[in-house]
Length: 535
Image 1: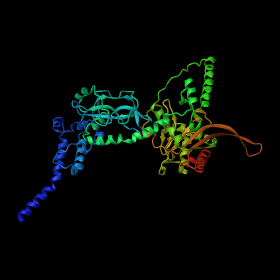
Image 2: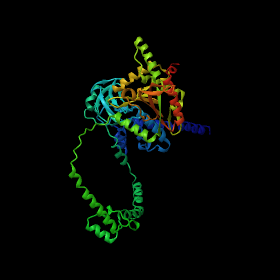
Image 3: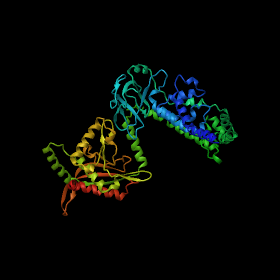
Image 4: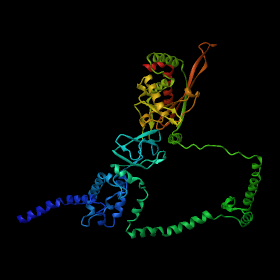
């Protein structure tokens, strides 16, 4: 008995390690797949070849444990999850070892990156590296024109640029689409001279091939050919194609070469009668008599025009503004502010700036500062709408609209409520110059909570209503300052003062009318008593 119990205990200890041994055997089998061992696979080796042709992300998403061959002596029910994890880990360790063809060395496919949260496609502005150049981490490969600006794309690994798949000037490249190939060894560059990246459509064919179960196809075909289609088609076809008309109406239409489908019936249940055909012929006769009079008047000269292709920034501006007007319930509040004291303070500050060698302060700098302080006083306007909640921001980041030859940009002055006027002026000038050079980076225009658009100073626009820049809840439109005659303290006294019209566009989902009016009151207070901004 003692001997028998020892045997049982020994065997139970061995059985505990069976699953571990099986997992190791599976992992070894997966890692052992290569060109030399593929002929030993049965039935599914073509599928595995197809799997290895996917990009790393596709291999991980497309592959499943049931797609891989299992040794006949192993239960797939108990070992599938562990085996699948082993396969994924082996794929991740050897991503660079796979290539799209057996005669190609290990290489890396570089896809179009997502360089902004709203980017879905991009354009190649220019390549800074040529085919055959050595690249190192941090070096700029190319300039990509995104939905907001032109951004430099840096290399992530060391190697050689073997193939440029998307040439300079290529447009509407989807995020993730291959734009270049890099290799580790310089002698491998020539092997990619005629390389073309594998598209996403071919893998669909191999998935359809390994369908060895004919009974499933029979089951699908039988219900498709079931009497449901026969019963539905006869009922719908006649009702759509058949046209009811009286015999006299049919004869009259036939003689006049008029299709019944073009005549609207006024008889019972829409039946076409003789009067309908006669009315149609009469109306057609009026049209034919009216048509010849047009060419006799004068020939319309052909228009001369030029088609200007959309830039990426123009596409995004159009889509975002259309989205804003279609989804955001706008309303507008306008107020006139006296800017005499503001102009006086500006002239005093500019005299100090000139004496110290600093840059002059503009009216727009003072407007940005006043708007930022008003947002701090009325934080409800420093918010954005979501389906679940209204997000109220603690930071006051002011976007400033800048018009350039390439389109409209809105770089952001972050924490404008905490910065001085000279600092705000320096940042606005620097960001405006970058916008004109089309060199803004995502951090230069992302993260804004409120927008200021000024068409008064540069263009002399008296007053306008701006479109809200989503996901923000408000935008301030600044008009020009003009001198007006205003009533004085006495009955016959009149004064001349400079007034500036400002219009606040509000998202009614976030900002109620009273809240918008309260913000404008605070803004007007800062403009008309500018000394309070310095406190």
